Amino acid sequence: MERHTDRLIYLDNAATTAAKPPEVARAVAEAIVGGAGNADRGGLGASLEASRTIFKARQKIARLFGCPQTEQTAFTANSTESLNMAIQGLLRPGDHVITTVMEHNSVLRPLRRMEEQGVRLTVLPVHPGVDWQIPAEAFEAAVCADTRMIVCTHAANLTGDPVDIEAVGKICRRRGILFVLDASQTAGVLDIDMERMNIDVVCFTGHKSLMGPQGTGGLCVRKGVEIRPLLEGGTGIRTYDPRQPLVMPTALEAGTLNGHGLAGLLAALEWREKEGKTAAEREISLAEQFYRGIRELPGVTVYGNFRRRQRAPIVAMNLYGYDSALVAEELYGRFGIQTRAGGHCAPLYHRALGTERQGAVRFSFSCFNTEEEAAEAVRAVSVLSEEG
Image (cartoon, rainbow, N blue to C red; front, side, top):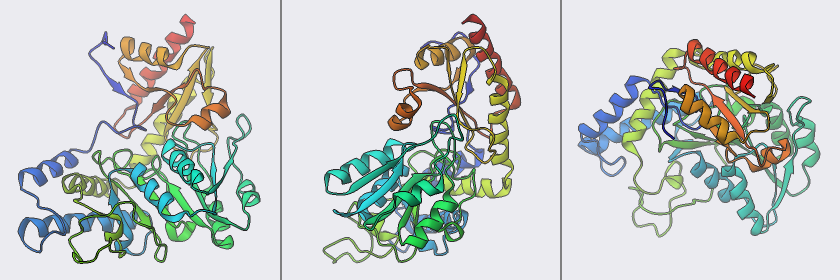
């Protein structure tokens, strides 16, 4: 819709971060203008330089997630592709898998496909209005003799509420179950350590809080966990093998990698390292500021548990009984505030909240947002609340 203000306050960072560190754009441009070659498709010149860049990005990602072996990091286009690889590449007919109502469709839809192929699925409920948690005991109680995997989000993309992944990891390791983590909303925000938290596969995307370009993502796989390749094709090695080589990371990287985008992701990861925890703390603080400003406004319903500070920088709300899309249009058209309305690819969570028809308006914050922008968002919601 057309805006009635020239100002734009972008608060849809859970979908993709709009503002990136300037180093990211420079790295992508240099990779393109400098004639970056095709990584692992030759040992000379531009190809070798692209291979070095991607190897450095692997090292940074492995370090970020506590993955001991760099080669166990494979790059994909996004976390959707990564989750499909993990789910379809590890489950077999007759297996039992546990997940939650908090999941994104990038988890739910591959699981439904596997269900059609003979996998049995258990979906754990959440407890809104109490603690918005799925207790570790619920995961434990759902485990049975044929349980092969627990796959769940680290934090819900709708409300930002976290799962206690350390507790889930302990259950999985004790019971000999694979633990696949969707870190789409938490990579770069909350701590993730595969070794300490007993995580077998971490699936991530580069274009959210990691501050990288779209079209970048990947998965880190614990040594010894073998994922059947989702794709097969050119690899640059073992050309005469009739099937996809199973050595990592080649097993999960058929075809040409997004070398230009991964150059940008490397720059973003280096920027994140320099920032330390400052950027993540800023994001969480801005979300808290906004939440405190709107939580008691007439007609406003906020979803989630904000007593816990270790959560994704997301605030989901509704205003009276208005359709969330209408509220989002008012925020954008009158105040220049871009949010995300609707179902957020989280159908089971909306069903649990009773918001299937209304949807929700999601505000999500970046370290490049400001306190002034958060305050302006509070003011805008206050105006709409007063107008009823």
